[in-house]
Amino acid sequence: MSLVDLISQADERGLAASGLACLDRCLPLLGGDDETLRPLWGNLADGTADAGGAWGDLLDAARGKLALSAEAGDEATLLAQRMLAAAPGERFAPQVRVWADACSVASLQIHRLLDPVGDTSGVDARRQGRTDGISPLVAAELRRQVTVLEVLAEHGTSGLRRALDVSTEGRRVLRAVVSRRSRGRV
Image (cartoon, rainbow, N blue to C red; front, side):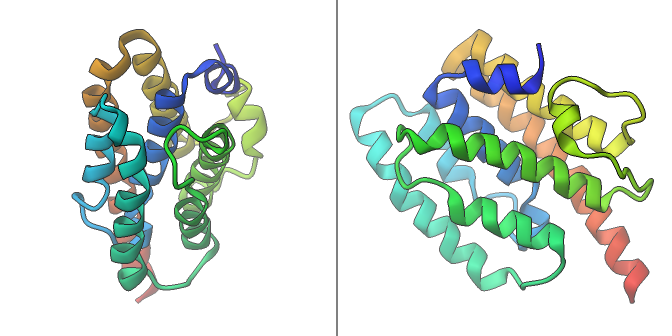
């Protein structure tokens, strides 16, 4: 099943987790540490009625931390900043589907921009499942996005741990790419 199909079939929690996972993997561009988005992940695991309302407060706190550390910069950084800015203040809002889809596109675009191989193809074909000639960094991000959505569709809330692990792995990879890239500019 293509990434576009998985997003269209995901429930609200899966969509929120998908968007959050994309944002989490792009944290190195925003200057955030590994714990910056952890409270939002915890909120997704919370099944109480109050959890959805707390999402907005936790999101505001994360935005505050990241606004202090993020510098405006290249296109990849701007895309990551837009992902964070566009996050809906309610976890179960209708805008979550739009946000998750936009995060998917932005994250793939970020990985395309940062890939040293220089993947020049657009991300739309990749999201539809066409992967011929895909660069390694973009291919890995596409696999992570698909894995997060599949795990959540299959296991629900109990799949959040695996989704977080997938995002952590992707964040480490992107952190290494960003570090290498910044050393090359100095």
